[in-house]
Length: 357
Image (cartoon, rainbow, N blue to C red; front, top):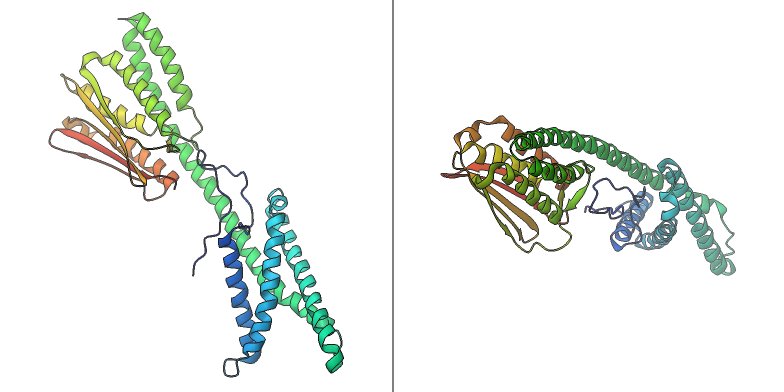
């Protein structure tokens, strides 16, 4: 059986938002409590088998050990649940030691109470004395699995932190490849307009400043899909100023719902490729078709443009698509797909990724 420990729900708009990220799993929810119950029962079974063996398995002893272990485990889960806010504010090593101390404290309370209850009821019958050594045995039996579990959770947390740092560096490197390409092409566009239409070039500079402000967005950020589409419309308008009637666009935007995000500057490089390696190379120009729709729990985006043979051999086109593919995979996992293939008359790029991943 595999349990998915929940370490707090990150904000969807930012991949590396660590607010509320705790060293411990969320023991306030049913899934975490179920894991605690199963682990405590397995421990009780192990203790009973070690004591009585399989041939003379003692079901009564299993019931007693299960009751005590469940009592300790559930009470520890409640204590750690309420202490989670405090623990999340200190270093993970300190949180681990404090959690270990709280578990031992709960075990001491439960063990001492259990021995006191058994002494109270059995002493008049069998002249039973209060056995303090049983309490120390409970502490030892609780300390070993608690220490192993906390050590595992600590190593798991360190692994997540390392993976986040590596992923953050990779996404920033991929994003930095987009910005110079976008900048050079934009400067060329402005330069081509300065001589023929200075006023239009001035408007382009103003619009371009907004686009660059968007392009300099933190590479870790997932922006609303509607913002990305708005950026792409403005970018297409700027390119149309340069290409005139040679460039046209057809948009088919379906109802994809609220709360849908996408890495910033995902669609713009695809449209840029469609223009610079497709439309611009055709003397008569052409139309770019953009379709965005929701299919079940996925976003499906299709961009197609008239085919030019040079497009199939252009390395920049492959680099841009690989960049987009890697960034989507970094944010949404391996189920995110980016494919590009030529047909008889057009070049089709498809982007697909899950919603709420």
